[in-house]
Image (cartoon, rainbow, N blue to C red; front, side, top):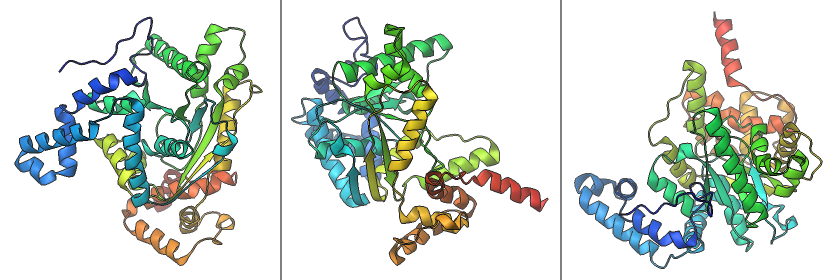
Length: 404
């Protein structure tokens, strides 16, 4: 089948990184329904026994199912309408509650650059999109790193869902600069010309230790296009033009918490962590299907032109994210279990059921990973109080020294 992925040209300079347009949807869907790797992945997940015994038949059944799902999908909006049904079912089956605050203070016909804390590869922007969908607003274009797009079918699926590509694999300073210039130009065009909102994470990679912190380098990238076009433009003017709004997402429980703890423990104990071939995809599936308890999404207020340096912008994003971050019983119970900062442990809303649920999850965590697991939940309490975060690595090193 012919590959109809668009190439960049003068009329469409962002073709290689932007989401797919409506006139590309039919061709992409047709390609996906015959993509062997996608069909194999689906059958391993939905028909594991049949995929082992009769792989050809299972692949045929998966292709037929995909074609049935794709019937009548002629635009990106159609595709997202199909996804909305799955999102509603996911929320119903894997969350106990989903609440949103702050969205009603933002204009419903204005594009914003939402920059959020990053806990889950796919769910963070998915919950933002779902909140916008429920409010009758247009969904966002989603920034996604090319490190997650190692399979062409994954790239296709993400770009159908309005994702655009953040370059992380470019080699050499000149290549990286050109890639980030193009990315910055696309972001600015989306906000100021298309009036289409964007979601980006505040840093590269998920926060695995419960500490949400903005990378100032992202602020520099966002403002490159305006400041290249107008050398006289200040950083603050470039920020105000993008209508940057911090967003905080809070999960009572993170379905990938054990995997995150394992990665941090491996980095500390051996100095390296090697991801498996399909680990990112497995994390996406775990995030979608795993139990999350309650989820809170908090929209902040747009940043103005008063900022003079990227660090100041990052600090304001961090302040709003921390202010909007909601603490659940799991956070206080983790801090209590660690024996840290007892004065911050608020048990006023901790029920016996909360405690039992927390203990049941903790018992499933391997002993060597427990401090790393607990830190993910305890650190947001410490952060909001302005205290130093809990560092399992430092704690472990101190215990080792005492043992010697």
